[in-house]
Length: 289
Image 1: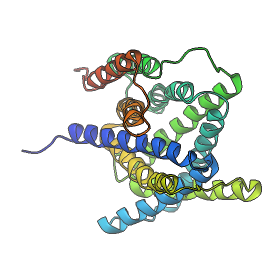
Image 2: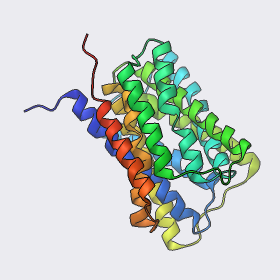
Image 3: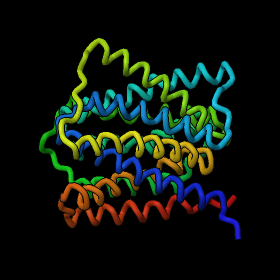
Image 4: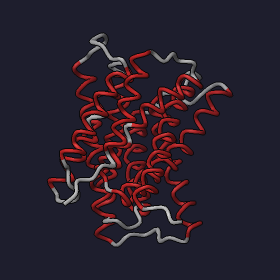
């Protein structure tokens, strides 16, 4: 019995969501031992490049892209680097929960961008699933008005915008084919940009404890595999559906936070998680033509 492409793509993106949630938890662990966001950004991109290179070589896939596609992938690397910069600056101004809530407007943005360029259809049913998932996230993080800062909020908006460009651009370049070489080149470009930025600022603080070093070295593994699987899934089931299902990432982060960081789950968070999971089911309902 063969597994349908849609089911396989869904399973892959759910795994990607859990791995990327693991990246966030690992970052918190490394922060507890003295690491800072700049150090996390650096190893995240370095690790992604190494992991992708190993995966590509082991599978025998082509690494190089045609000249035009290579230039466009490198350009997307600018948006990828910007996404990291905006994200960590947002976290410096407003609570993590509020940052994530604002950032998770990106599935809606992906749907809008993809429909504008004719890459995917944003149906009423899928749009309803996206809105339901977003409302669920409001409960998952139990966000209030406390700690609101306009600067941090705008950083989070720019995080969502830049990541949406990466998602749609990667899928457009891939066109249903192998997304891994494109993702590989995007990560290289982002690493170069981040390295140049850090060379001027010198703002890199490494972990100082054994536990934080473990968390630090888990970041590139989780991120490298997670981001690879994300774009593989996008090439299989489309960027809109993939981004909607990625709403499972913050839910995974809440669960991992409870298991690893001993953070408490509130009834609101549990209710929000139920809403998000129900929205995942909506994503599979296709409008018959």
